[in-house]
Image 1 (cartoon, one colour):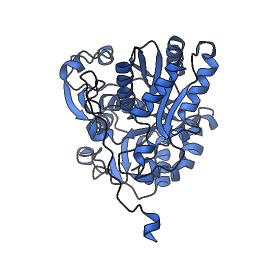
Image 2: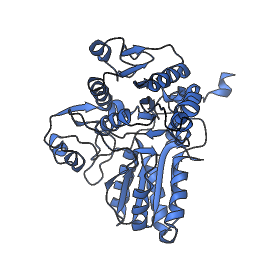
Image 3: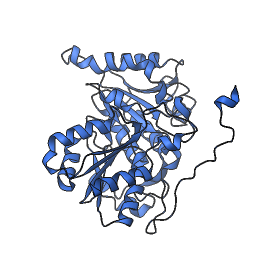
Image 4: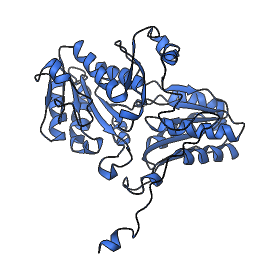
Length: 381
């Protein structure tokens, strides 16, 4: 029976393509988008605009940056509490390491293994004026809490005529592929929650972004689902300001200027897009513009529309399944607002419409090669 279910021979592991492109090796660790040196951080326009260019910097991975954000949130707000499964221990990914020792078990504590209960408790805490930061151990297990998020948290302000709200609620969850998680530890549920009026949905791409966006989410007067690409917990490392700072929610960032095609993504997918753009610009004379959405809902459509009106082409990529995804919404917005400026159909490069596979994850993922092919199709149309 097992011979019918399993391949006769083990599939060899497919290696990432890491050949240098114009002197720049591919991959997250080698990304030019990360502030890998002190000099790059000190000259970063994003940090300069926040007055952080000359502040103290510390080398952090995304896990450490999130830990730093949680620590600052609790230091600056006595009503902030952090909780979830194994959170007092440090969490399964160690993002809350040391917080229970610093702030005590009354503010950093474990919960039973019940996602509906975790979020329901968080909604109750937030409704009473607390800043509740709940952790769902894996985004794949957030679905039992769907009712609490969609029917309670998202509607609190509306159904009370703004008399009461749960704006102090933030739900953190490690999401997306990590390379070996299979269908219960690799999912990308952002589209489910982006469909819900009253919720904000944020996905960071780097340690600096994660810290600033998480602090902004915690302090925002609306409930927020904060999805953390778990492959970036250790893979993304850069020099991060130690100061207290926030980055704007609902505002996309243009990471690279271009004139011929707009390429849009978020989270860990940004690095596949960066690599694809390097390939395209090596092989053609095309100039690609790269945009990180950062906040999935509310969507910063204006930034994308402005770019597409300039380039005439759009390629959108995300790990989540293609059908009814964020890319489909962007495609709809662009055809409504950029129709007469489009030079080619909008290209979507997404996960396949199947459960997230284990053995075949490399085929499921919208890798740099698939994005490269989509950009080439758009340019050739």
